[in-house]
Structure formats: structure tokens, C-alpha cells
Image (tube, rainbow, N blue to C red; front, side, top):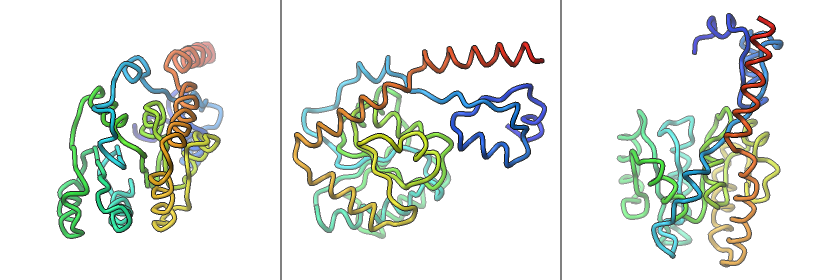
Length: 237
């Protein structure tokens, strides 16, 4: 939505304090902005099963295939991961302008049999693939909230990501979300390897933290809050 339209709106709901701050810095009146949050579809997530009892992928990324999502860093990370765990497999799910570039880069780095690309899939397929993976890797450089991280947590995955404002705000207190300094590829790689090296009991413990933390992101809660906010906006119109 364009900035002039936002400035004309009677009220604006932002998904995070970081998003609200971004709007204020763009000239939108503080009085118009209320933070409501965001949510994931537990009705679908909870009924989806993993594709097999054994994890199919060691790492998984879901998001737009773009430089600001850290996609080039992701390949550098996996190049280093396979030096230690030569059979480790990474699944990248997403589309974008950099898709063809990433396909070529995978070949240049010699990762053809270690990195798999999936341009599109249904929500059911997505949740099944998340539940068939060991760790969610998210080196994004900018997020307004982090829906991909929330879905990964709801599917029981530990998360390794860059320490950017929105992710720190929303997920910083989760014991199974590990935030590392932005653009520190070595640090992120080490954290991914630490998770891949833990025993099954420790992994399930992290998964339990993930699922428990994610339950706060339910649509019923967000919808009630949004309806209350819209009523207030209408009364103040």
C-alpha cells in the first residue's frame, strides 16, 4: 500500500512494534497506529503429518528468493555445513527474481545433490516438509514480523536466524530460536551444526519449546483484537 493512502487512513494495524516504528518514521501519525500481531493456521498445521518417520532434510528455508532474504548467505552456510556433514541436505522453498541465479549458484558451489529447490507448494505440502526437516534456517535481513519463523515453530522446528529487530521482538524469548549477529555467516553455520549434532532427546525438547511458544499466534486471538480496534477506529471517525 502506498504511503499517501496510509496517511489518509483512519486507523492502521501493524503486525509488530518494529513495523509501527517504520510507519512512524515514514510520516504516518503515531495516533493512527495500533499493534495487533499476526498468526498461523493451526487448524491445518496440527493435522499434517511428516512425510516419513526419519527426517528427510537436515535444513529448510521458506521465503522469497531474494538477496534481502539472505539467500546467498544461506548457500554459503550450507557449503560450510557439508564440509562437516557431507550428506546434509537443504531444502529451499520459495520463488522470486533471484530463483534462476540461485539455481546457477548451487551448481557453481557444487551443491547440486545437497541443496534442493521447490518453487511452489500448497500449505499442506509446506507443513509436511517442515515437519520432515531438522532445523529452520532464516538468514533474512529484513522482516516485518516473521510468519515463516512462526510456521516453522508451529511445526516443531528449532530456528536459527539473523538477529534483526522484528525477529528479536516477536521470537527473542523463545528457547528454541537462536539469533546470531547479522551477516555473521560463520556464527550462523556453527549454530546450525550445533543443532544438527544434538541427540534425539535434545532435539525433541527444542521442538516442544517451539510448539509451545507458537501457540500464542492463533487467529482467533488476533481476529478479536482487530475487531475491537476497528470498532474504536469507527467510533473515532
